[in-house]
Length: 293
Image (cartoon, rainbow, N blue to C red; front, top):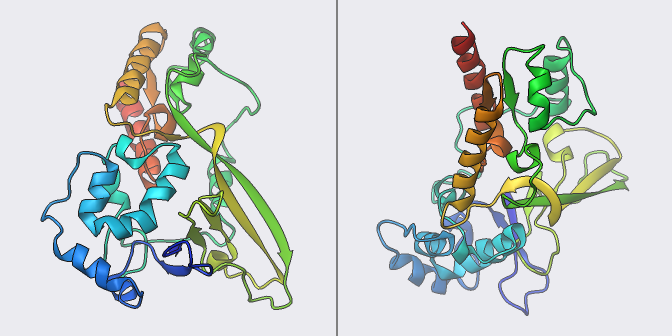
């Protein structure tokens, strides 16, 4: 992954660097001496008090300011000092090993036709109803036909009490651009973080980098935070959202005439990645099989 940073107000062109930051690349910056001094006095163990303190104690105040602070303000709508550091170890890093992949997974694969094709192939033999809205009030009717229910929706939406949980949503804007060279692209990478407040969006995505398509055009998608949607659970300091979500789970189970299982980022109010959501799905299927015999 790549990040666009601006060193100061006078930096008009910016710099494209790896994310997580690579010390080897940072050495080429004119502000490296200041960064080096900050890295030399970092604590042995990062602070877990909040996201801001975690980042500063992991990479120093300068790198925190350039890479994390303003991105977090845009993404979450609040200062990192008000957010939990729980997801920090999985998302934030300072590297010296030259590994420029975001995650250190052994296997990584991008389906040639995109992930949507995989989902469609899995779902094809399964009877699916689309366009229907189901809520807590519908469980009694579902019990007449089904032995169990899996909820993957946001629970405040499922019980029809919006606002009981905090969410952040994104709005995407995609732009199609014709190009003369079928191998050319517009951005330096598949996903480019844009932490600076100079940009109203948090990142750009250009899938042509991943698919390897040779077409005389490209599509760049910008992600704008703050949309009225439920995409990201908000990791607050006091864990209040997580406790309220657990209470909603208990309420739904107590109300339902059939067993209810919860799976995924929204229903479990967890800031997890795609592979973790898939693992939850497989674990939930095994749990249902064991429960129903």
